[in-house]
Length: 86
Image (cartoon, rainbow, N blue to C red; front, side, top):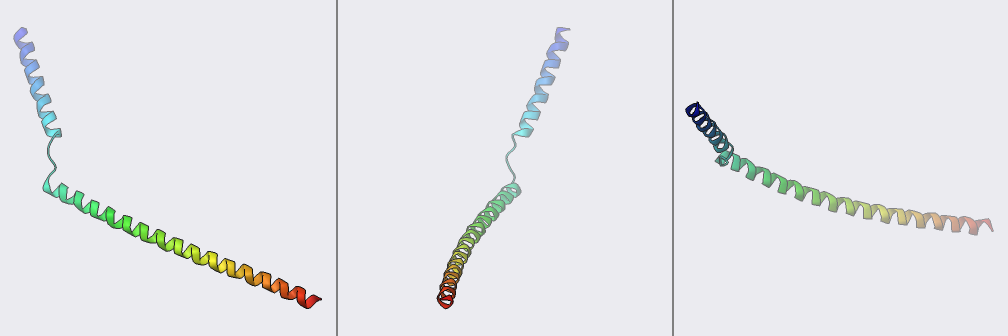
């Protein structure tokens, strides 16, 4: 009986050792290349995002300038209407 328990324990230990060894493998060259490609793609996308944000802020500034000019034109128009009404 004792021999059976010892043999079972050794078998179980070997199985666990193989499972642990299988989980701790190093990444392959292909996986490292994929990771490198993904990192460069992320970098490229981040650059595109910053460019688009800059473009967006420029457009928002242009809109604000145009709205300011429009408001000035409307106030000038109101002043002319008041002047003609007298």
